[in-house]
Image 1 (cartoon, rainbow, N blue to C red):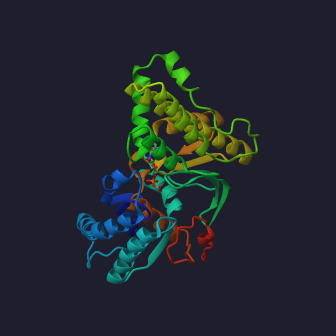
Image 2 (tube, rainbow, N blue to C red):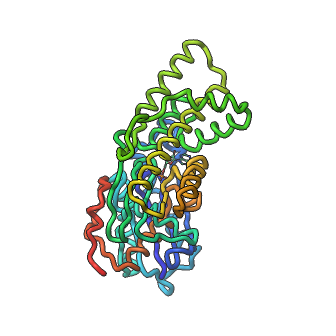
Image 3 (cartoon, rainbow, N blue to C red):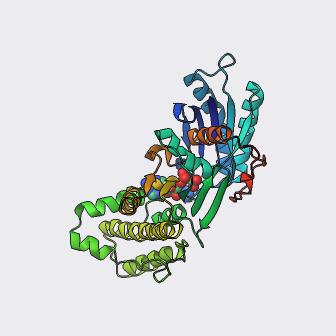
Length: 354
Ligand code: KG4
């Protein structure tokens, strides 16, 4: 079964052609990062226009690479319909409608967060139910109980910023530009490469622990306090004219350390509370090595199986959308919603079917 996935929820235009949900035949991707760089974040209208400009060539490239044509048709088209920037989603959804009509095949609407989880299929892994799902991206930081392909229940969410958003804003404060996650990770790695062990340990205490005194059952994310704390620390450093470039690497490490620690603590609490024996972690921030290693360690200690997409499929792409579409069809689920929206609730998942 061959599916074409269309991703356009934010600033990546992606077309993925995937066989049986697992084998990537083509996955051209255009990232608008350079376009949004000077604004320090995604400008929604520019994002929509760039999707419109880039999709025709991306679709052509993908079809040629995977040898898909009127004689060798795909079995379905899948497109992200929520959550995301509505203008961007509309462009991708229109592309998907055109492909649906051209090939006369079904169109499967896909929930973006589910597509992030489905990305594990692209590296030969799979989702077994029930499982704890951790989603860490630019717009979301949440924990879910994945009960069945039809039922996903949110366990915890962020009270303010998403982790990716916080990393992006922290990077601007540190003068690294957009997107911040990879830049902060690189700077933090540079710091640990040159700093002495005792300096690394001291840097871990430069910023306060997030929601330090929360109880075992209190599972929630928050990153705005950490952001503010970074802002005031940098202000006081600048006042003291302490602007050594190594200082930015140290602060990047301090920020990443506390942010990752906070996610790890919440995941551990959720595993203790739910007693689930599988963790699936997905979303752009799962490209971060410290987070991957930290989760791996917790899972090993607890005898929990840890499933995470390959780094290249953690950030937005079309292949994960094709996999999610395949998963929905395989499980006989038919989405009841076929309009794009920025909302991230799972009411969409009131599926008909087996
Ligand atoms: O999943 P994604 O591509 O888009 C959304 O659906 O939001 O995630 C994008 C986010 C950005 O905030 C980016 O800074 C972050 O993922 N990110 C990272 C890394 N690579 C991307 N954060 C930390 N470490 C990374 N290596």
